[in-house]
Length: 140
Image (cartoon, rainbow, N blue to C red; front, side):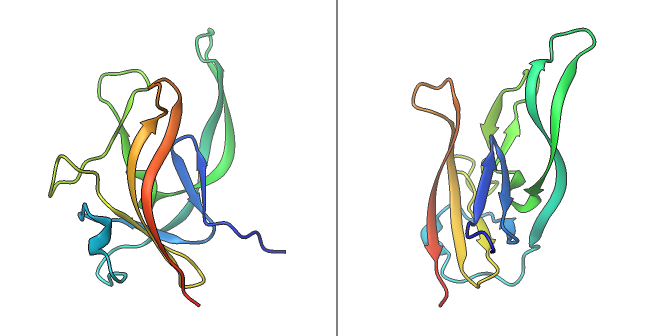
């Protein structure tokens, strides 16, 4: 039986269920009415994700990794803040530096999602939590 899901998150890494994705320079979800044809669509690639950091401060440092997948078309919705230890920030659009760019994800069944990431932390500002606005267009 084929699993029915579209996106999975491992902290800030996004995996799709066989979809393709891309980052646009658009900052308004409502301006996307159809999928563009002039973009580079990215598929999931194999990756090693950190799942256990409890040994990071030991000497020698030991981190737990697991084999998984990430979608590079969705990978750049956030970035590591230069000069910090593990602090991340939303990626902002070059066309409007006050707004986050819109991402597109086209699924195998012809449906697609338009996503704009809005945050990396929960309401307390302490826990890592992905938040986003989206529009899902279902194909019959």
